[in-house]
Image (cartoon, rainbow, N blue to C red):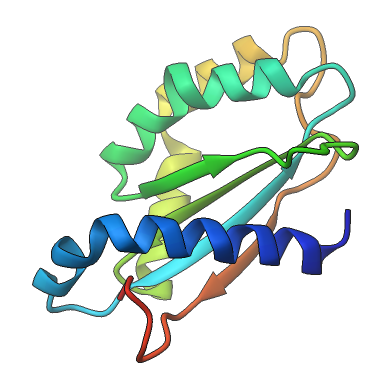
Length: 139
């Protein structure tokens, strides 16, 4: 699956999400930066990767000001992808948020426990920082 397919898929998801978040995002006065992250799960480990996010990572994100917007898997997921979008106040805050997340003792334990039988991902995640356009429903 090419990156253009993934971006097209996520743009559609953002449009749908935007409709539900218009009033909330209009109330926010500070600009935001969105981060699109794509993980490639090790073959046979996508379910375990999803479980780690669902059962642990989401709560740890909240402690470090990483606001998850949504998580997706492609319908034809030949590449074992988990795709998600998070919201940060700025790219500088994103850098601080990720550093704090990586240093979090609970995260270190959760990651180690989830990877007892080998890593859940086959490579480092792809990350794209995105600024909303002036006509975006999410700002």
